[in-house]
Image (cartoon, rainbow, N blue to C red; front, top):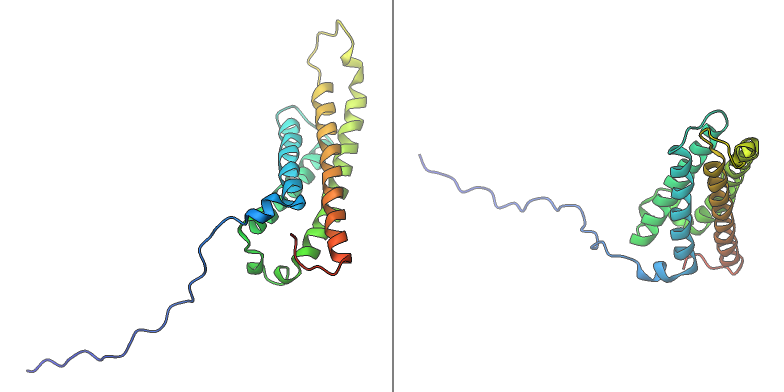
Length: 175
């Protein structure tokens, strides 16, 4: 039996190669990139402070809101830093608007609510801040979380206003 040569049909083409991943350094130096870093650091300080101490009642919502916004901010930051926002269906073509809505609706709204909750809880525990009080006191933890949340809400407001000013200038990019 004679062996036949295998067919000389070329293999099917593979998926198109994407460019290599590299950091979008211009984003890191932009006002929005710096604000995002501040939001991530102070947001983490907020929810770690709440989670590390005993919490009950409305503090559950404050912790949920802070972690939700923090995770969404981390995703926005990562996609923007890598320059890969086009990979997000429907939102990638509207990335500036996506950042604007995230900052003003979610960031400011949820962090303002969480800050109010933690401020109210700190006010409820203000009695234990007196000298000579020997029981475990959550006043300083709630007050610290409230301060971090207020500053974080302001950072979200600033980044939202930055995105809004770029949008009003008919610019479509975040940098």
